[in-house]
Length: 286
Image (cartoon, rainbow, N blue to C red; front, side):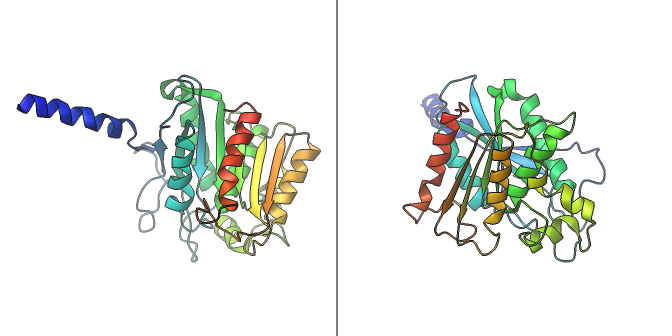
């Protein structure tokens, strides 16, 4: 009887074991100057959310999600876990990035800490693609708000820098794109660049300035009534993609404001995740 109970418990625990989240730390314990004592509580990591419905084994698509939060905190559940579970249900593996942030007193981390964290994560996924059964040409990056700036920075700077991995596609939700006036998000700019950044750094981290013919295709989604991050951020990125003949889609909803996440309570706005799936399929990423 005890043996029977044991096998029953094992049987019912297998699905939970398969779909359990795996925390992957991005830096070795021996690496110094990654965290600041008294500010950080944990080293940068990502959580792996395996798909619950794989479309084709050994040909999986993966997305690295960068939650928003103005580079002060991470909207982990709203802009990380919830979209991860949606994409999981559509056969996509997801990694949610816990990158380094700052605070109003600037005691935390400025650029390039966040950029380095995203690159560490992207490199890990790429280098372990075979063990995850992920196709290396189907690894994309996604970002919300300030996380959108991180995703856009990776997507625009990496093609220009030898030795870095360029994502295959980019998904941007109400993204911070520019660091230049008048459309920069002041809070994100301060957290990322400090109180008085020089002009070269501002230009370097204005993603619309760095789009090239090698920038990956992108789908961009925002609400026209966003009073936090002006919708011109999305429009500028989209226009530069078109100028460089890069496949791009832009959805501007007439309502939603900033930070709508999955928009579960809005029957129209909540269709955006399905539009992303359709876009991925039409571009042969899924």
